Image (cartoon, rainbow, N blue to C red; front, top):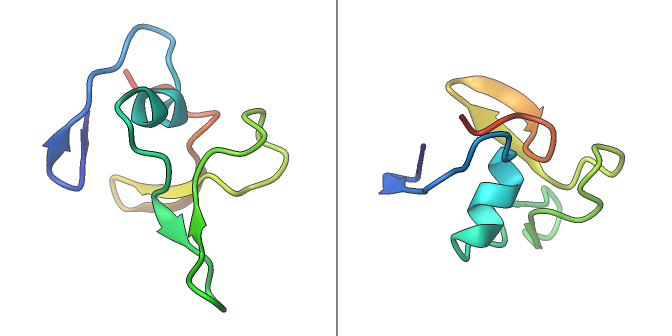
Length: 68
């Protein structure tokens, strides 16, 4: 997969969030109000901190979407 133009390796069954964190990418969005960085927090889809746009689809939870 690619993230911001950079190739990110992903293993079978690995979530997008897990692949990003394994590649050293710990935040991929910022909060609306203060612009604070957000990435993986709970890892189970409850907190919604890991929201990401995937192929034009907005607000996907990166911890739940398979990378491959």
